[in-house]
Structures are given as structure tokens and as C-alpha cells.
Image (cartoon, rainbow over all chains, first blue to last red; front, side):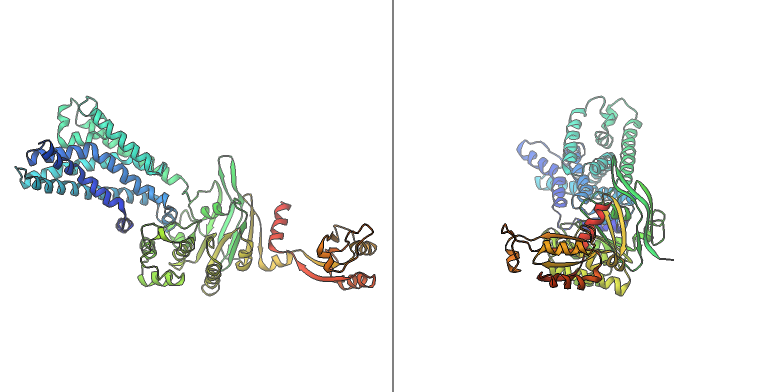
Length: 241
Length: 326
């Protein structure tokens, strides 16, 4: 597994998508930095961190993660490397799980990028109220949200295996971003898997009259269904040439 | 008992209603080069994919190195090198980096080994060029390097010379022969280029419409190729009349065709009363040992014999014949 993950990093060498994902992870903080000056939006670190976390975990991350996951799986089809990997040989189950773990590691890197860039832009903007504890809490909140989001992305594994082109995943990601925009604040938001991570991590779930078991159950069910369908599909399907 | 590296029994693959591989019984002996010959769409690639576990069979059994690959997956496939159609590599990486990934995943990475194999396929000087900038020939050579890098006992190569220039083809052919002769590597190679298979294979499997029509050793093939004697004569009608008089039958013991046009002028042949040329070619299909006597008969009857050749059917003609017989 460790070798596989290392090789996944080697595969990203000279890859523009990795750099692009880093830039996209920093985008919410860049936008908030601009908003600080343009619209006098954020006055303190506390407000900056919570706004960036909201934009990232409820909106940006959905689109960004859908691009990453479709790239991770789709490139093996588009560059015809899946047949090479399978004849190494690598077990299909191990391949699937290793890729998904790589997706998690990528997410962790992006979480760090978002938090560090928010911190940096906050200092550049000269915001007040910084404390290490605030930063740690904000980072932990984003990390938790992104890990929960990671779990809800297992259906995207299936989509990436089924339609190897990146476009459907991107369309799906954009659609879910819009869905999140529409449902946040609605009473049925805790039943939408991709809205739950933000609601749980930010504590906003307390404003909804549902048991905490509901959003966790929705996330877990999405994860299990996504992984099971992806595994069955990938292990039963012939490798395309 | 023959030691088979690949053995299949009733191996089949069906895509909905389309049976693309139909009950194949293939036998590839250890240390031999087995050429799988067939037209495009004959089922060669699908068969190879099933052997490599890339495509699941709809029926039948596969034994690799005498073992069921389903229950000895790692053990069996670690010992196989392969190329299926165009080799797939990561486009943003160099040849070395691509091989490094494969070697590390196989658990046998050795930088010297990677360099050596790149040298063997003449890619050692391409240190910074990314795979996406490779020519088709270079891609194919990298595919061969990846296939032989771990010193496998079996190579499964689907159209490995696609995209190679004549010099590259000669090099790869030499390499494969060396691997087979000196290192005892068993090779299953497919191609639709008959001359290539003829040049390299010890055994040839003929496939058409998903069926393995026949498996023939090089020696056996030689015996089964039709032989005939070709006479080029100045008076075809008279020559045919003479053959009929000796009791030979047209289309059974011989066949002929008239030559028209300037070709016959070279023969200095006669013309009939209508001014038509009457030279031609006779293929004697039986009584080949009597070719001297037939030649004397023609000459003594005033027929000029331009050419007498003992010919052998080529692989293309043989392939066409066995396909049309099925």
C-alpha cells in the first residue's frame, strides 16, 4: 500500500492538475482577502476562518474533489495504463482502495493549503484577533469537514470508473455545489450527504431538529453504498484496452 | 509428457450475442515461440487479454505454468511480461520513471536493471523526454522494455512490432529470438503480418472468427504447404492437350492460365489465327516427380519452355486456404 501511494505521488510529477488543485484550495482565502478590501467583509481572523471554511467545505471542495477523484481514476483509463497496472499484477481491490487512500492524502494536503493560505492572507490583510488556538480549531474544523466529505465521495469513484471522462464528474460536482447552495438552511439539508460535512463540522447541525445520528448515518450509508458499488463494478468488469 | 506454459480448454468469450472467442484449446510449449495468426478481429487480442486476466472468460479453463491463475494470481502473473495493443504509460513521465513505477510495484526495482533494459531497446539516451512526446516506435520499445524488465518466463505480446520501422522490427525480432533461445523464455506473439510470424515462430496458431483453426509446428507447416511445379510455356493450348493425353485432369492434377499482352511477346510465342497470344502458365499439382518428363514432352512437341519452377505455397496462401476450408 505504501509503495502504491509513493508511486501515486511519482505519477503526479510534472502534473499540472496537482498545482491547479493547490491553487484552487487557496482560492477561498484569496477571494476573502479581496473581499476584505473591496467590500470591507471580514474584520477578524475568527470571521475569516469561519467564512473560508464554509466556502471551502460547503461549496469549493465539492467541485475540487470531484475533479481530483475523476483524474485519479480516469487517467488510468485515458492514458491506457490500467492494463499495465493490472498485469504487474495488482489486485483490483487493492488498486481501488489505494487510489481512494491517495484521494484522502490529496485532500489532507489541500486542507493544509487552505488553512495556511487563509492564515497568510489574514496577516497580509492585517486582521485582528489571531490566536494559535483559533487557528488550530479552524484547521481541525476544516479537516473534519473534508474527511467527512471524503467519505461522501465514494459514489464519484463509481462514476469515474463508469464514465472515465472527467467531464461527467465535473458536471456532477458543479451540480452538487448548487444543490448545497439551495439546501443549506432548508429543513432537509441534514439528509443531503454533501451538505452534512459542513453542518456537522461547523456545529450548524444543532439548528436543525434532527438527531446527530441522521447526518452521520447519511454520510456512512453514502460511503458504504459508493464503495460497494465501485468495488463490485471494478472487480467484475473487463479492463478496457 | 509435454510441458505446457499456456494451456486452455474450451476458452470462450461472449459479449452479449457476439461470440468473439469460441472454445479455444491452445497449447504453448515451454521455451517455444508461439505465433498467433489471424485477421483483425479474429479474437487474438481477446484471447491474450483472457490469459492476462484483463478480460474474464465466459467459459473454459486456463492453466499458466500448469497452475490455475485464479488461485495463484501473484505467483503466475509476476512471471509474465506483456504488451497488449499500444503500450500504456504515464504521459507526464519519462521512460525511466515509467519503468521505475512498474518495477517498484512489482517489488523488484533495481536502477541498474532499468538502465540496462532501456539500453537494450535504445531508449537510454531519452533521459528527459516525456512519454507524451514519444514516437509510436519509441512507445512500442518502452512497452517491450517493461515486458522483459523483470526477466519473465513467459511473454505475451500482442502486435509488438506495430509502429516499428524495419530496423526496429529486425532488432526486436532478434531480441525475442535471443530471449527464447538463450534464456528459454516462452513467447506468445500475435500478429496479422504473416511474414513476421513466419520468421519468428516455432509453432503457429491460426485464428479466424474466434476459432483456433489449427496449431502447426514450423516443420509440420512445411510439410503441409502445397507444392506445385510451374511451367511457363509458349503454346498453352498444345501444352494442355499434351497433359490431357497423359491422363492428367484439369483442376485436379494441373491448372493453367493464358498470358495476354506484352508479357508473351517476351516469350517470342506464337499467335493463333485470330492474332491472339497463346502463351501461358501451367501449375502442375500432382506427379511433381515427373516434371522432367513433362518438360521433355513439351520441348519435343515444339513448345518453348521459358521457366520450370518447383514452388511452395506461401504462408499467406496457406492461411487463406485453411480459412476458406473452415
